[in-house]
Length: 364
Ligand code: ADP
Ligand code: GN1
Ligand code: MG
Image (cartoon, rainbow, N blue to C red; front, side, top):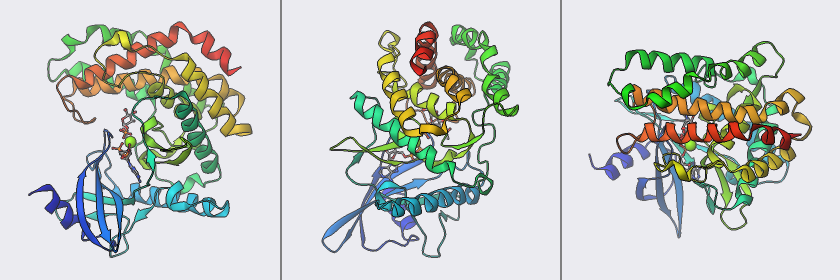
């Protein structure tokens, strides 16, 4: 069926006034399928984000949407209390006509709608260091908001999401299977990951032993999951709340560093261009520490630099696992894209290892 017609049928189930004008693919997320939809209502157009939820990953959409509704309701209340605009500073779920948080079509596909947050931008790479600083303020402040949230209300949507030990086991299993005979194309990368096995248990062990606090974290803090004001660059809203779960602050910090300190796209083929930007790391660190303030503990601080390496190698390992398994997890647009993505991550790890002392010194 033609896309517009298909999406129109889906959208009829949501509580939206006006006439649907257009619906087209939007953004650069790797997981869900995102559309920008425009309605005309009176004299002014209203825009929304429609997403087809990735149900091969999110098995219980009820639980997923329950988490998102709880967190957004909680945040909206706080935003109103401080005199802010909740429709702009938080995601807003548009309910279906029957009052649900998402719509399940007869074929099992699930859809949700959010208010489109206007006059903002989600960057794919850092163009101005100040933008990265502001994204740190956004994610750090978001963590602070969540510190007051009752974690027991949340479902653990993707168990072991940042359990790097488990990620490594999954990688080894995919390698052992080598279902698509692709291991031969990435021997160097495989060796690189295997040589760093001692990294993989460090944060998990600190969390398990209680030495590092388990906190409600975002867990997917890349730059394109935050919206910045398109004129002032100031933080507006943290989005993509699918992975809010208990985790470590070092995961949130490290994942932002992984993505933002790479001057190139995540799938850049020319690795000579992929050079870790310590200046941007310093910028993000400054913003993050300012925003989280007193809430960060010593053990978390001591592991911010290590968390950056860990999140980067974990992501590289996940891209390589997906490459070996036939590209079923991360959306790809061309053959070999997951391998290219893995290679950029490993290049960033090797850069960070060389300046690890400096990265730690900056925290101090
Ligand atoms: P995925 O889980 O696939 O990464 P996201 O929820 O991150 O999907 O959405 C993909 C992109 O769509 C974001 O990076 C952002 O550019 C845009 N986006 C998502 N929600 C909104 C919103 N409410 N307002 C404006 N843009 C949005
Ligand atoms: C995915 O959904 P998106 O595109 O913001 C992934 C992250 C990875 C990231 C790599 C739920 O993020 O964990 O770090 O791709 N999200 C999920 O770019 O797996
Ligand atoms: Mg996203």
